[in-house]
Image 1: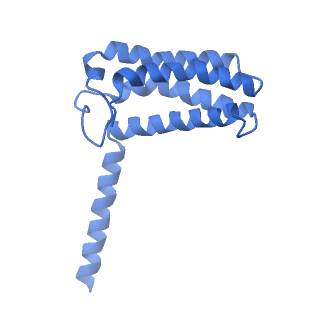
Image 2: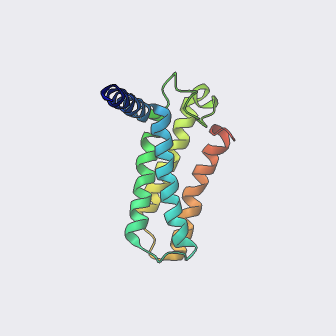
Length: 147
């Protein structure tokens, strides 16, 4: 009985260590960053579509998330992280890192501009979606693998 308990505890510890190690992998970090950005875009879309009421704090938080991600996202693409953990990153990223960084910064710049001119209503959020969303699409077309 004690042996079973010890083996179960050891297995749980190993699993926990594996999950902790994977969480620090660049592929996992960048996937989480994209989820944050997707959540921010989703919040804006809900307001723009009238599914949620206009909320300046939600708009501000969403744009702030996009600024932060846009500025730091390329840091999560070190050499050696081209494959693994179900990454959708195209090898083109490492072939043309300067352009990739430029596209990521375009997201940050667009979000900063929209943040500076924070929209005051639902229609304004629709314009934000166009301005910021275009930068997302441009990068995804070039640097995201379709699965």
